[in-house]
Image 1 (tube, one colour):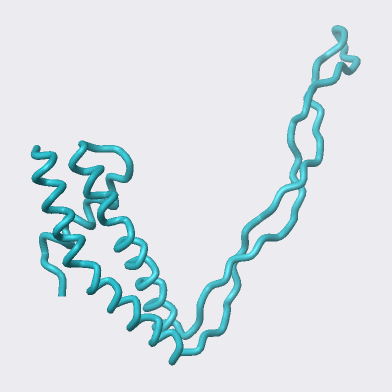
Image 2: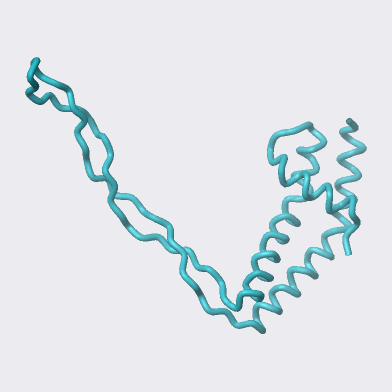
Amino acid sequence: MFSRVTLAVLGGVMLLGACGTPQEQCISRSTREVRNLEYLLKETEENLARGYAWEEYEVPTWRREICGTQLVPGTGGPVERPRYCLVRDTETKRRIKSIDPAQEARKRDALKAKIAALMPQVEANIAACRATYPE
């Protein structure tokens, strides 16, 4: 469906992020939406293969943190020791979420169609980036 060169460029651009040459930055900007759609497609295909999805949720927790020091009596005089406080925090956990396989398959097909529709413009943008910022 996609040319090997395009897939290689998309894969390489994912590693570069915001750093790199002006050409690499231009290509990264040009391929951002397709990379996002490919991430969603991968997640959808994994859900179909497993038969369920993962759902993330947050749980409130407490953690101990050093919030100062205090002087306590010691054998050679006062000693400075850490003072601990409880700090409210959250912990992210995962749980299984049921999916509708038919709906997930429709989602997968729609993502594939959207990626296929965007690829000609993405390839044109990559060519323009290479022309504008030759290495």
